[in-house]
Structures are given as structure tokens and as C-alpha cells.
Image 1 (cartoon, rainbow, N blue to C red):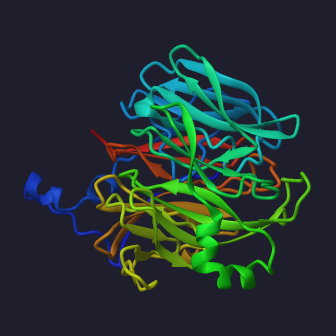
Image 2 (tube, rainbow, N blue to C red):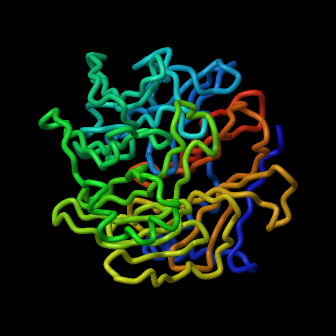
Length: 396
């Protein structure tokens, strides 16, 4: 394994650390990440992959007690178990076993729901996809939808966004929502409404093929959702990069029933805590209340290739991953970078080889995500025979 190296940079000159009391340090949200960060595996169990699902999903429960993750002894990492681990004791509970997924990139899209009372995941059984919800205390499972896959909801809310299989959605081309309060699935947005507003672009982009809503992500206030669009190539081969053509970024308001914003490209978007702005790879910031795709950029922070950026719950910091070659790193090295959203100041909290780990056809990336209190960052590392879920934590 590579030696781990910590770097601190501020527009090339280093971070100015203020020591004139707590008030000064409060004005430097990056300061705790500049020194004394502890990095360790979430689980000490060896001989298996351990993977959290995505940069859009905090794997830590809302009360901070547990971490949700996927484990696998399969070389490719996409068949395994959905588990949770008690942070204080290390005790693990299997929520679902023999779970077959699409790849090791997002594994089962496992995520918390209903304040941590439930966990959701998707799987394929006999070539038929389904979304399952588990009560984490009783371990009772409920299949909430079939022939659908799982987007990303909010751990403190009840809504779970769903969509049809992007390579062959059949009749399920709309945006669906399962509500933990009512235990019902409803159609939140029909694809026809998207076509009515963006049909000309869709016809050109997707060569006239039938298009479906794909990969919806709920905003922090649970009032908006962004998603991309997909035109499948049919059949049942979902383990292929060309299984569908996927593009576009649409923001839809669930309360008003109005589409708020559109962009013709999809990168790696994530919500700001204000549920209005979207932060995109390249350190670009979009305001979905603006009718056009005008944007601003985060100043003097490296825009790493391959990055998956997300924002801290208090809206003061960003974390992202990316290939470090532009910063002088060797081929195959990735890093996890934290930056002050005021611009300029940033710190690389970890750098590692990412060429090994799960041998999935779609490889796993680090996908860093903050905990709800902003004191921990979870990310996947593939520097050895197994991909491992790590946690970086600032000093108390």
C-alpha cells in the first residue's frame, strides 16, 4: 500500500492558521481538516470488499450511531450483503444477503430513510429488478417496487425516488416516489411533461428513441429533485457502458409540479444545503432558480479529473475526489480534497492508489461524503486486493 501523504495548499501558499481564540478558528472551517485528521477503515474485517454507495449519500445514520455499507467476497464486488455497523462497538448486522447489483460503482445504492428507521436498496433477482426497504430493528423486508431502480432520497425524510431500468424501462418511463409514511408508490412526474418542454433537444440528443427519467436525486428540503434522461438499447444486458445513452440535467419542483431548470450536460452534480443551487464537477455552481444555465466557479481550487463533489451540511466546505496527475501525482493515484467554499483554501487529506480493489466492469471510485455533523468524511479506497470503506475524522 502507498504511504499516505497529507498536503495543505492555499492558492499555492499555505493556509493561514489563526490562533487568536475560538472565534477566529470558527471563521476558518477548513482548519480542523488541516492537521490531525485520523483515517481508518470503517470495519476492521479483512478479506472482503466494503463499499459505501455514492457521493450523494451519507452512509452514517442520522443519529450518528451506525454506518450503512455493502460487503462482498466476490472478486468483482457486485454480489454481497447490505450491512450496518455500530460505530461505538464495531458490531455488524446483515440487513440483506446474496444481493446482486449492477456494478461495484454504486453497489446496491443502499441508503438511510425515515430518520434511520429504514434502509433501502435495490437488487436483481432472476433478471428482474426490485427496490427493497428494511426495518433495521426488526429486519423485516418490504418490496416496494418491481422493475424499478433506486435514486437517492434523504435519510431524514420519507420519500424514496424510483425510476425504470435505464437500459429497458418498458412502461416505467416516469419519475416515481415511494412514501414511507403512506407505504405507497406514486408517479411524481410523467416523461410526457419533460418531452413537452424539452422535446426538441431530446429528439436530437437521443436520435428519436423513447426516453425515460433516470437517476433522480432528492434535494435536502425534499421539495425538489434533479435527474438525467436515458434512452435504452433494449434487452436485459445491464452490465455494459452502452446499455443506454444518458445525458441532460433537469430540476423539477415536487410541490409546484413545475420543471425549474435544465442543462444539456450531466457531470457529477450534487445539491447545496439550500436546495436551490447545484455543485457540479469542475467546481461549477448553478442556481436552479435562474432560467438560464449561468454559473459561477469556485476560485483557486483544483478541478480534479473524475471528481465527485459534495457540500458539507453547513454549506461552508466541499469535498471531492479525483485523479491527482494534474498536481504531480503518479498514474493511478486519486486524492480526497476538502476546500473552503469561499475559494482559495484547500487541503488534500489523503492520496492513494485506486487501480486495484473490486474488479467490476464499472470500477468503484472514492465517492467522498460528509457525515451529518460535518466531522467525518467517508470514502472508498482501492489500493489493495479489496476495496475498503474508510473514514477520515477531525480531532475532537
